[in-house]
Length: 473
Ligand code: UD1
Ligand code: CA
Image 1: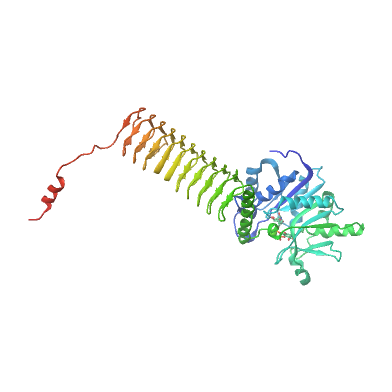
Image 2: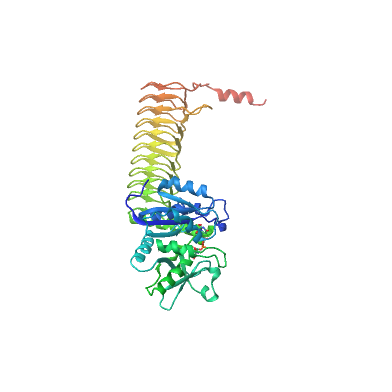
């Protein structure tokens, strides 16, 4: 992958920290909300800015973090390694050699902030470019600012410093305007500033936030305007995730954003449904409560996904009815098909147009032709079912002989009577019939009837005889 047309800017995303408060073996930025990791969301939000390069600073759990990012973005993302986590300025320093010569501005974000709107990042870049400020910083008013860096301003309202919570005076702790951890900076200033940062503070770390005070001092000396400008954002979108309570809250917000986007695009989505970030709804789709749509699922126009359905990497064509509690995984459902309730469509299945798959029917790697029906209680594994074929209740495709899987082929318009076992490999010809309760081990020619069951016997007067025998004298 390559970025088509770019702006002279580089984005640095910090993701080297361990995230101790998550209490997890998984690096913090790989924890997931709404179907993707925190870091993937953070990267997604900078893509529309067309940067020349995106550098992710990795450290803790670096192999895992890199492979997750590569799997999704290929070489669209460059990595820098911070071997010891000595603070956010130290992390940015690790990324400096990766910045292309042509990038004159740098956007810095944190990998644990998944909800940041691209519009806010754009505003950070634009407002800085249009002013003399060397830095712009995203801020938010927050009722409980504990743990955040506070925005310190002078009487004119110019930002003069960011003070980390642990370094604040009691008066500064009262400040409720916080640093969200997103900055646009002039590239030359960034390099100059990083060289001057010290670790003389409460945590003994190199703080990136010290660059704000430097920018303020530089422009003060030059009697220019503000050295750092702030761009206000909404607190609930700018929160960093530090523990699993915040993770859960962020997921609620993320799902609400995703659902509202699809609602505005003309889909009905009940509260309590869950549509993850890569799903596509093509309009006039209805998703009921408790339905979960995951992965690269696509649902086309007019389809209904009823209560409790689970779709994962499913392609659902137009006007399909997915009745309650049906599961479709890595499979396709054709136009106007009806599935469920309680159907289980397992990977590599293709259900034809107008086909019906009823309750307690399980398919695996099975193609069902147009208008074919399996309305109740069946296991259809490794099958090819012709158009208009009718599969009776209790039919089993015996696809596994203990060693290998074999295919069952059902011809067009064929009729498989209830409770039949078709022992694969086996073929039922077009328009053939299989008598109810048959065990079919040999191919059935087109138009033939196969009956493979014990012949019924009638014993006249049996009951009376047996009663007479059992009667005690
Ligand atoms: C940071 C800010 C604080 C701000 C808050 C917003 C600093 C000094 N403080 O504090 O002003 O209010 O974010 O959420 O910047 N990281 C590295 N390497 C390191 C340290 C951190 O890559 O050596 C990464 C972490 O993985 C994380 C991000 O930087 O993605 C922020 O680090 P974190 O330790 O969470 O910073 P805060 O203490 O929350
Ligand atoms: Ca944080």
